[in-house]
Length: 159
Image 1: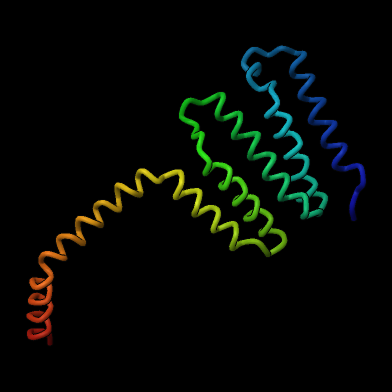
Image 2 (image 1 turned 120 degrees about the vertical axis):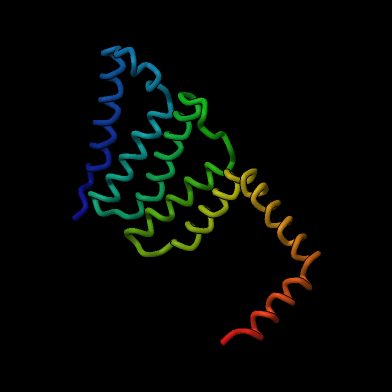
């Protein structure tokens, strides 16, 4: 059963709370009254429409809008927040995963985008880790005859 006014009701409640909190002028919430908050409100409205209103096509845009709003807030509020292209592929990958929970399709692009995102976000660490692998391979390249001797000795005395 789909309610026609559900989405509009959620949007109006969210925007009403937004402007009410702005008028109350609460000091620690002053950083929240920016355009990314409107993205979060609209995104949460889509997500509620998808989960409560059982309209699964709303889950994908809801996740993207909420994720973008959170990301833009995070960039402004926290010094440690990453400002990297991989955040955007992470948000879209999460949107595919969340949609998959209800529709049972879209898991492959979701996982692929998440892997690409993690590779992008942790590229420096991964490259450092790859150097250790390269050194180990280089060591094995120099001493591969020793490895053959050890394997041969093991096979001779194996019971």
